[in-house]
Length: 393
Image (cartoon, rainbow, N blue to C red; front, side, top):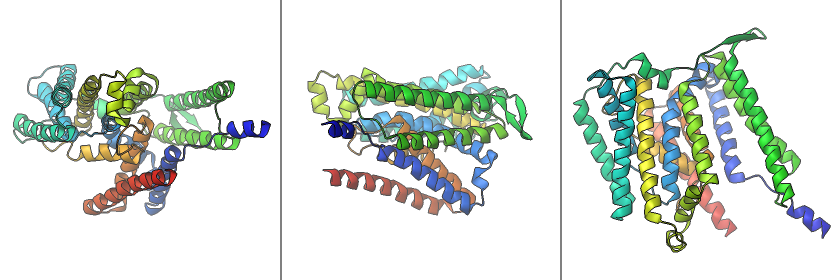
């Protein structure tokens, strides 16, 4: 009996979740050797974060749609029209930047409410509704911009996509480093270690399985290494980008929402079995509505970040973003039928796509080959997931 109790107390690393992290590291190391270390430069790490900020923002919202068993095909076009709306307010009407930001969020929210209404109230399949918003959004973008680029945008606007938090440099071992990056790295390390110890103490108290010590140490070591690697690279450059702070806040909020709240549990229940969720008392129409309304709002945020980084709004902005966001969710472990997947997994999936894009560009591969590689990665990730589930069954 004692031996049995010990066996039951042993947990196992989530291979699906941490396997993608290891895959991310492996892909990064592959391009490290192919580029002669160029992708590890502080400049490139900063570019990697800024270039993929809007994709991560969209992936967070897209995961909620995927958890319900659906997708949103209109996000790229809505991002474009949101960015265009903000730019027009600032450049043409000379209104304060904050008004432009509010306009972008309002337009995104309206598109989200539009989609949510047709999906939840009229029960039209999300694929059809979001295909319509893809066309409508792109048409509106070309119309209001008159097929021209709108810019340049003022520095107070562009800093949210290309600016940095105030920096204080300190010299350590002959290197000039940003003090804030070091402080954040130390705080993050303490938080990670403390939360892990606290979680294991709670699990042990209630008899839940915990990881063997060597696995726990391995997991923490990998996480701490990634945190320090990224933050030290940023410390060597210009410090913490505003977009990184924005991403961190959104990821933390939606991680809490999906893991710790009733609203988050309802999304998982809806994606797992919509009929059962409805019979259990969940207002499935309400869930569908707010999930798509939320996606529209995040499109507004992504539209602001994208136009700020480019210092202008263009008719073709956001082209293909929906595919990158959807791919990020499925590569990160979301289930095809819905009801499975995590915010962290979606972020990891987005980073994998970003590293692939960045690495292939540095190597000099054409955009045609890049699309082939990304398609194969997406298909491979989903195939491995489905095959592993079939074997377990």
